[in-house]
Image 1 (tube, rainbow, N blue to C red):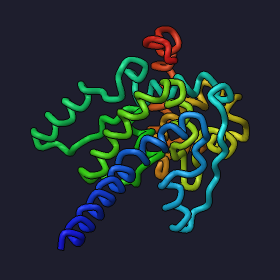
Image 2 (image 1 turned 180 degrees about the vertical axis):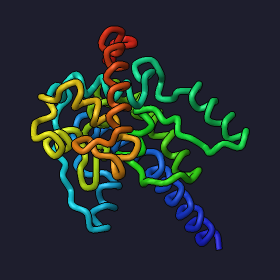
Image 3 (image 1 turned 180 degrees about the horizontal axis):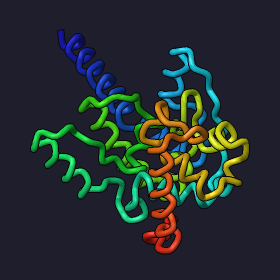
Length: 231
């Protein structure tokens, strides 16, 4: 009987440590690996492949991305990127207050949160996924420099059906590498990020053109201030 109890407790300990490994050590290991290794695929890419879409994705280094694209992404998606710790608490508070007033819950995700979601998690809006997203955001903000977060984000984000990362997007939409994007082309790519399956950078609607114009204007402030310079 004692041997049975001892064996059962041993099994529970192994199960507990296995769960610790899966839920704590594995995510940390993935974050450490992706600090230096290019991200080959994301969960969304795999999902889209199973849905029958193609896959165009070419990894480039931070230095092979036009500075205008870096500035446009910050201007469009996360103006406080260089200053925050992964979360824009003011935007989160505003979104929660709007939800309490009966408005539709709107996004307040930073580039860091979007990177965590894109690279490590599946698409969706469940509380479980949001909780995991927060955890991965803390990890990448702790382990990766801001420059690496931007590099991974721009290499992983969806720019259109089957088009992932800024290099594939630049070649698909403008027939040139990401390093040669103009400020207007970069602004057009940034303008479609909220809904890349609806809007097109190479065939922009009037709305996309106007939004890209606003991004281009705000990107000049990123150039001037860099809020402060991202490292």
